[in-house]
Image (cartoon, rainbow, N blue to C red):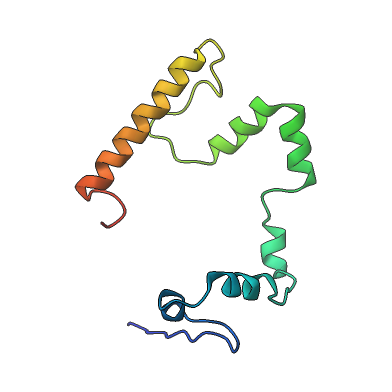
Length: 115
């Protein structure tokens, strides 16, 4: 079973093709800033992940808070350490560079993101 949907810009808003055709970006940004606001649905509010209590827990014990957050993710191997303070800043930067390089290589090869 398939369904198709079409979207039409709301009255007074620009379509993406209008933006690409040269409509001033400033005007479109101003339109977006002046959108009507509405309260989120109750089920969304009930499932909120960041609130005053979670912020207080994070501030009181950052390692415990981030360990709690990490446990909700899928891990091929469970993590053993939230933050290894013995690892130098240089080593941490090098690890990030290596991950960035690998991610860029995957994107370039078309293996990631449907490119």
